[in-house]
Image 1 (cartoon, rainbow over the protein chains, first blue to last red):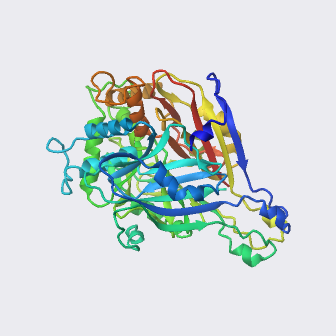
Image 2 (cartoon, each protein chain N blue to C red):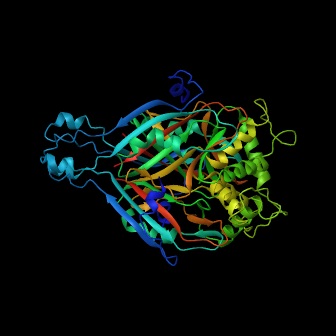
Image 3 (cartoon, helix red, strand yellow):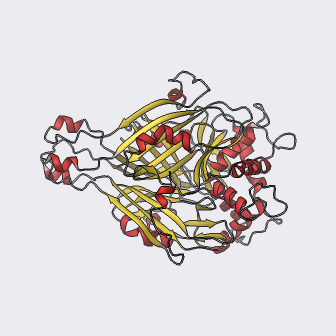
Length: 186
Length: 186
Length: 186
């Protein structure tokens, strides 16, 4: 779905920065407020917000673009230009954007995270009451972050061809995860 | 304070994604501009921006949710739906969202950062003029990032029960830190 | 350019949090829609979006503030208060904000990234088809992230004196990189 946005343009020359797309949406036609026709033409800024609950996932990285689009796709279609914000309300899981095709990339990323943050007897953590995977989960959540902001263009998330939204679950026994989605635009 | 937002709903079943909250704020009543009553009903988009100066902190992670809310709480209350952006104007400190209860989590996160980024004689850095903690501080600032975006719902930061805002100070002898806060919504 | 924003104020005392700047932009004068003069005074929310193509860079960290400002500077000048969003449409490069002066900081950051993410024979990756630098590039892109949000104040990016925008190229043989820039404000 995102790929279609990119394929609109020819491959750019690789030599210099270029403007590819430009659109400026400004409701500047406020000057005749008695003309309801011109008022109707104003792209009124819109806000939409909903909380999505994602079912528990095993520890690791999971592609959730389809789930997110299923929840917000219809709302997205009403925005010509804007921004979509996703915010996971937890401190032991994270959201990131990465490769959407080969699941090995997700497995390797989990391998990296488990390697880089010590866990178990050799780990130096004081916060251990909630299990050996808890403190590492907190650290990983700050490494990748709890929120994403994605441009909206012509009613779609304007991601690159290979980009997808990942839920990274850092606990061994996860619970459901809540994501607050906020859309803003015209 | 954030907890109260979550406690409104019953615990969700853990089996499938669900829509918990949905709100769409669209000023679509532009069609009768001669009716001042209907115009007054339009939720006009608002912007607020201020720069907060945080006193110097010791190296480590610090919970600053109360300080931030003290500065922006009154402004926040005017937004039904929106986004709050926090931006730290420095390259040797960072902002992140993580656990708001046990201070051991903050201490362990500092332990991790100090362990993962080499410092002192064994470190391979070229940039050492400003002290052994300076280059590691720059790296940590990019690992955790310099900005946060948090959804606003019903006049409050819509974070999870256990989420708090952390200032991570990466220098040994810190100065005051400035955070630009921008609120946008209806 | 950003420095001029900071130099407006005197050095703050280092003892307590303070409000430095406060501005609230609210189009609240909707109450007399038949008066076109008052309507014209409303700071109408604006959106601007364009895609910038950056020429291929060698592996490492690159300061791109001048390139970005060259592309969006004129648009920025139309915003009194707002937010600028930059989104790189790739999974093997990243955007971050860090030191804008000494290029050693950029070199040292690349040294850190190459050290922290294993590459080559000793690396445990399953995803190796696209070369030994590919899987490490995906991991680095999630560590630093693919997007930035920067406050706009008085027509300029309101960054700190020493902050600059970096493109971090994680591939050995990079292609051009596309960045979607979205501006929103009044």
